[in-house]
Amino acid sequence: MSSSMKDLLDKFFDFCREYRQEIPHQKMAEILREYADRLD
Image (cartoon, rainbow, N blue to C red; front, top):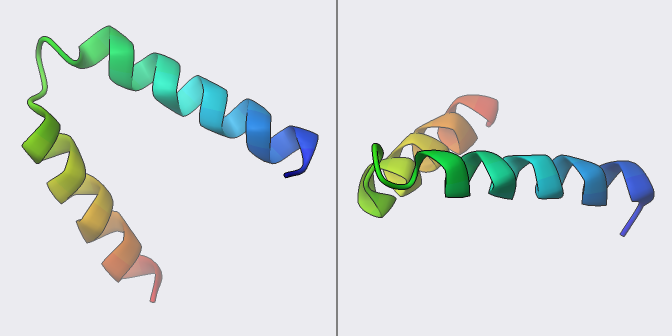
């Protein structure tokens, strides 16, 4: 994995940890699926 990809994932997971009390895991997964669908 490239350094920039690792940095991106680290920041993303930091974000998820910070907001996990406010955004349920299911909602976060739903948002990510919708984002992935839009990329296609």
